[in-house]
Image (cartoon, rainbow over all chains, first blue to last red; front, side):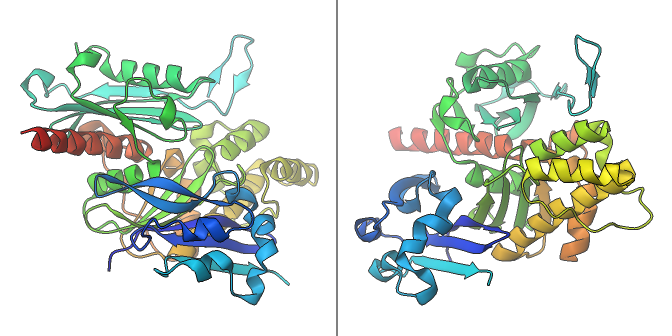
Length: 99
Length: 303
């Protein structure tokens, strides 16, 4: 199965926080960018099979503070807007704060 | 480890190196390419003749990315008679990739590392752990060296090459020896609890005051580093064959602990002098390979 999956985020003492994007599934439509209330998503060139493909990505600035940025969408309750907006099922959210 | 101008020993300072293959001649090559990987701590340049490693250099990155790129490639070219116009294609990668002045284009280091690991160890590589100066990357790839998934942790410097330099300096143990020294403990201590290098450093100072030996503090620090890396790898999934790249691939204290936690052995490091297949230069090797592929592609389009 083809895939080019990027985990944006981190695991630290407070838990696990990731936005996961599959660059092979992404069709570059930009719907996720439009629905993100924090402006945390952008289109970025990924180098796949010697081509530059524009795919959704978390901005460099937000990658290190995703726990705070993405908490406004209440990922622990599901229905994260970018995940829901993606018609290609290219985006997932891993959200495991330590209790 | 070296002495600086004031006579103070710099334990963190690792040795730079370069080499070219005496039995190869670039004038016989059809395609001359280079990959320049400007990392946060080290800058690596690899020159390839028709896709085989010809010359390479590993230097410390200075405050200016373009200078570091120029110096690294310049050093690799030294004595070969090559000039910049002899290269058909040059790819820049790494942290400072947008500031590689002589490069035809930049490519993210993730793609380059996977490609480089595939070249160094062959098509059986599936999981690559890259321990860089300022970040840690866990990469899964297929038999062609194409990225399948990856995870990068650059949130802080603890558990990276730079963090290791800080601890080596604190404990006054030459950076080349930290791995060996850390393995001299008879019993493995609990890992340090701090995930931030600033806190880890003060925690280490506290342990020394408590009477812990240097070896034990080092073991505790490396244990913590290995634990964090293993968590990253388990997130993307660790599939055989497993390899470690980046400057810290030379740190046997770290390598042993990661192997121990994951329950899997890494593939051994090939003989560098014979082949130039240096795990610290995996990114630059991948970049030089992509440079060749991109050059060939551009020729096909034209022809």
